[in-house]
Length: 326
Ligand code: ACO
Image (cartoon, rainbow, N blue to C red; front, side, top):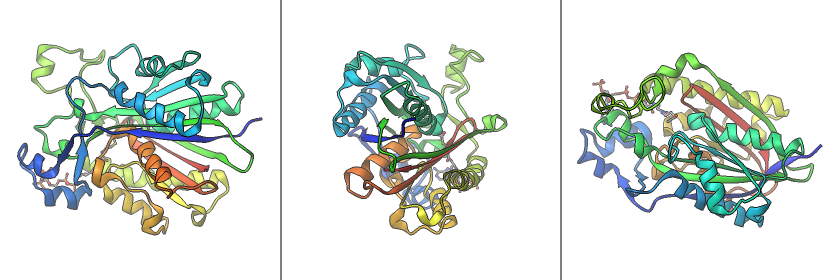
């Protein structure tokens, strides 16, 4: 009976910048290679001792402020992350406590880089059903914590950050129109973190074998990503009864500028209709879409009434897209 939409956005990034030139001193790579192959120039890295919830808290507080909603009114906090502060309690519970969302439930959600879109779909369903009035969706990851800075094929890609969106009731002419969410577990081997779970608990051997870091088949992930971005966007447009010309702004997961450009060309979008942050932040996992959305909103690029499509992919392998009238 209710229509769910975006009431406010927020984001938070570490102050410390790690440039391509810094990485040149750490592994056998070059600024030229990284820029040409990925579009990344620098990324943000959290300080030692900091944790994912530190950034999640700031992003959530900014989203609540932007919406003008008090933390006590939030009914649920969902945090999409693959780098929780700890295995448990959930990072969402830590955030719920620290922002003073005293009446909210809280849980983490694991869908790697697609996590924000999965969390958003849950939030929208809760609001549309009338189960919740306000749901705070946070996507936060410190990928630097699981990145192998001796592996040049992955360490140049990742960065840290958090984004958040408050979902609540909106008028009929606004809000979420459709979601497309998918998974193909057969591709799990292309992007994973081997140790620290129940299959291979932490041990002296797992640490020595560098099994607590992201392992990735870059080429396989790349091929999958280009297809998934296009097909998921097409399905979500179909489901919403929209055409590609209706897209005012595309907010894609920021993994590689070549993946983003492939999607942009496929849908015939001009550059100003696609939000890009990868040059400055790299791939910040689940948080990349809400960080890009928050920048677009705060800079005035994303405006009320516009049709926004968000699309992403990641470990699982998973993918997802949504269309929302802001
Ligand atoms: N610097 C210099 N050379 C490098 C580097 C580096 N940092 N990394 C790899 N190379 C070399 C490789 O060793 C290879 O050399 P070889 O030809 O002698 O073997 C050469 O560069 C080309 O390597 P490719 O892997 O073929 O390069 P490609 O053009 O595919 O780019 C990249 C690699 C950037 C990783 C790309 O495949 C990619 O972006 N893939 C998608 C990754 C992705 O999206 N991951 C995130 C998913 S979301 C999530 O859940 C985290």
